[in-house]
Length: 447
Image (cartoon, rainbow, N blue to C red; front, side, top):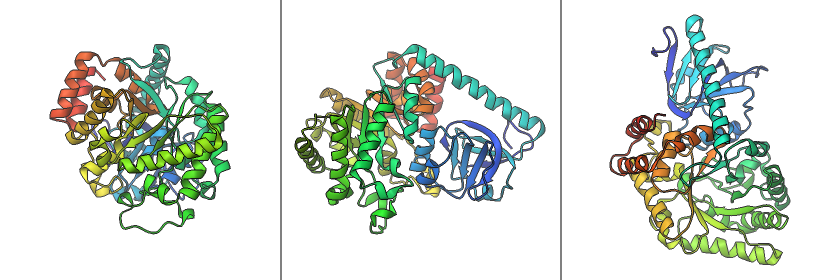
């Protein structure tokens, strides 16, 4: 029994996306009503999640999944509260059962009525008002303090128009494979890529967009590409490895689309995912330069997503070749902790603020800073006020944050002075841990 409720049945999962929602539950195959509901399912793929309409889906709870999965990252981008790896009992909830979903606490309170329901609705109303005030404060304050550049990530191109109403300075991560969920046959189509980037640039009113080349594999399979089945796709032919093995239909058409859009005025950067060796980067960068020269297109900054430990630990080999770096905290955590981001049995073992993760982030940030190379961080950690405070204290120069999370992150950064940074950095590098740092940072900054 949760302390907030007297008669609710509480299902305990793992926090996915922060937020509080009150609504009746529906299953994935139930007819969706034209009113808000909480979706319960055994699991959701990133494609399933991308198709959800935030106007109707107040939140979701899955029996399986992991807190740093791409499904959760899509939920971050859409601003949908989520709980994952809950007990299978959620699948027995009758359609229409009124529930309260606590994304930040990893809880689903089922069967609310009477005073319990009134308290749950009051909490949701308070959250809505708090979020409104935060948005207004972030817009009024302008750029984030402390030299931290806030950018955003998008799940759906239609979200680009929201940039002007946020404190974000551009799109720090465009996960291009997500643009083609539901229309996989176009993922090798140069023209489809070109139109997508140019349209997005115009909708974003010319803001800078960091285009991550296709990161296919892991929990984002694309059956239309007829890829062979792998025993462990997270450790297989994924990201840049796949692109370099299939340059003619995956890498070169996408690079041509990027440079064509840049020639037509789009402010773009190119970022290669899942890079392990400097040779992979130099090979991909050489292909990009050849494409650029053939099109007589302008130069664009070229960088690497640091998410493989080998890249992070050897980052000094990259900094003289790259224009920027972006730390992908979700995959970096998965690989450092040897814990699959989609395995529900390990959901509680995935600690994005583990001292080893913090030390690796600090190493990358310090090495890049000494060379004058900007380094941002993205992932669920950057979208959390506590995580953002830790990352900033560890030395990153920018954060890529889902649009709905920007106001809360902006607020946390405004409370982060030099003394707090030093204290948080020390605690992160010596003790670490999400449980400890959440309590410590929340108390220190008054979050």
